[in-house]
Length: 203
Image (cartoon, rainbow, N blue to C red; front, side, top):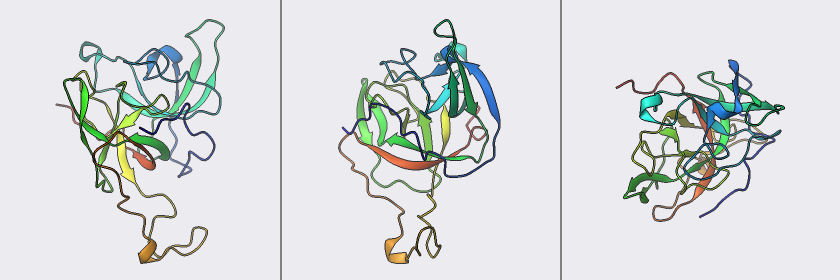
């Protein structure tokens, strides 16, 4: 499995807006640090993972969590009460690593997405099968069988549109979608996600 020790910092933004930035306590976002099935990266300056805000159990409201991308972090005098600024605006486009896992069975990955499509749902996933710097997968359930909050949908990068000039004309022969993903091994891919905080199922 491809793993990353920290999330891709500089260049995470693919759109300049919209922006709806809220401040939350460090301890109220997941999967960060020990607030996950397996320890993930601590939040820090220059790191911009997509996270869920609020409870991690069904009794605490999962999977109807607010989700968004970390914009900045201000360390607190007392851990874990740092202040995290999160953009929760629908329609904001960011780059993040996404695991190709789309199904678990008995706590282990049992299915992998091989042919992703634009608009396909992406979920905040706290499973330990994801690398330390990856918070997203294609699976609506985590390895413990809990429903994952929806983070958004797969979207185009600026250089993945046909016949547009983003550092050079993109020809149909060079069109970047759908990307080729492996269907039989855990892997993580750097792709664009259009945040869709308000589109998740309520049932």
